[in-house]
Image 1 (spheres, rainbow, N blue to C red):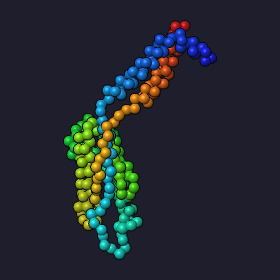
Image 2: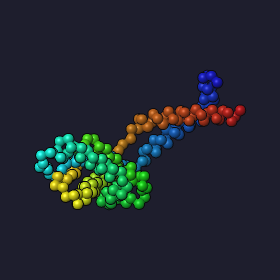
Image 3: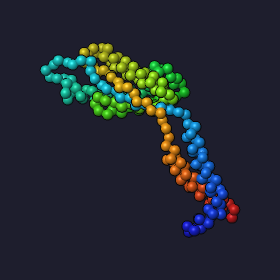
Image 4: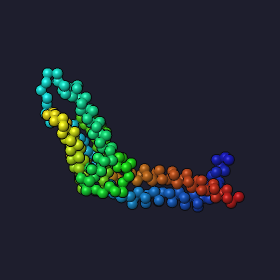
Length: 202
């Protein structure tokens, strides 16, 4: 088929073409408009020490200390991917997690190591207050886990977690991009609807 034949088919079935295109655009805009409000939160954790160890070989200072910090940061990141730890965090924030699967729990909090001593954490919540509670619960649980690891080692320069104030921003949609994508998808589906209608009429 040549291009002009396709154009003739669309002209012939212009009503169904426009109807499908507009339906896709309106359905997409309405869907995103009625999405539940959520707040994106960014939290930074800093790994430091309770004290410094006085030793001539500098076992935890400089290069070796950074190596130890780096390994512990990996441990914290793994904690935040654990459903058990995440459940404890939400429990501290007074959140019910019964409806969440293990997969959702492990992905609800995203943690990335930015440097040997800095961890960036991101998550979403339904309100600013809940975002604040989750942040506080997260720091509390991670700090408690850190202390628990040192119960038997009793290191004077053991790791300590320090958090910065969380950044909480209301999640918004870019309706211009949504409209553009929905419009292109509508044209595509409208084109095929016109072709199918023309084929069935023959």
